Amino acid sequence: MRKSNLINWRALHINPIMLFFFVCFFATTAAAEKPLTDSRDIPKGSKLVLEKPLTIPANSAHVKLQDGQVKPGAINPVDQYYPNCSFRVRSVEQVSRTIAPDSFSVIRVRWDEERVSGRSISEFTTQLRLRSEKQPQAFELTCQQWGEAGNFEYLSVTDIKKALGSFFELRFGK
Image (cartoon, rainbow, N blue to C red; front, side):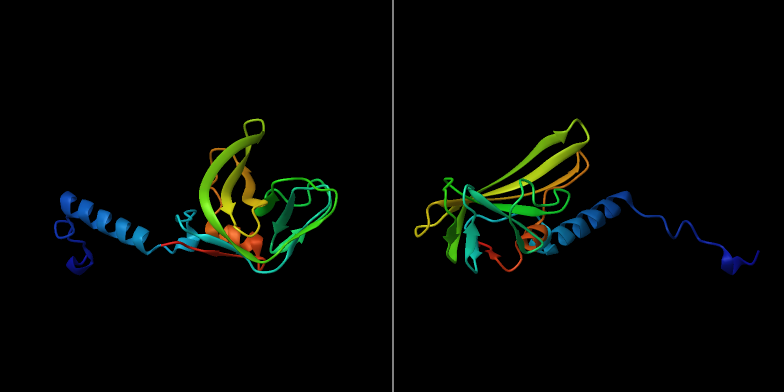
C-alpha cells in the first residue's frame, strides 16, 4: 500500500476529558435551543385561549377535539391512538351549552400514565387545570393518546396544538 492511504491513528487520538466537555457542551446547547413547541413543558402563567364558541352537548360535561375538529356524538368518537383532547365543564346539563371565546389561565399541569390493556397499552395524559373569571364552569383540558406502555412519551405541545386546531391557542407564560 502507498503511505498516503494509511490513517495516522496517533494523530486521531482524542483526549477523553476533551471529549467529555465537547459532548456536554453540545448536549446542553441542543437542549437550550430546542423550541418549546417540541417539548411537553407548559410554563407557569400560560393561557389557553378559546378562539371561537365551543358547544358542550346536552347530557355531557365535555366535548372532544381531534385534528382540529369537534368530535360529537358517540361514546368514544376519537381514535385513541392519535392525540385528542377533552374540554370539560363542571356539571352535566340536560341542554347543550356554549362556551364563549375566552382566555383561561393555566393554573396547574399534570402528566399521568394509566394502563388500559393489560401490560401493553397505556393512556398518556396531559391535564391542564384552567381558571376563568367569566366562565368558571369551564375548568379543564385533558389531552391524551394511547401508546406502548413504558416505551412512549407524553404529548408534546405540538401534538396538543394539532388536536385543538383553530379552536384554541396556547400562549406561554414567561
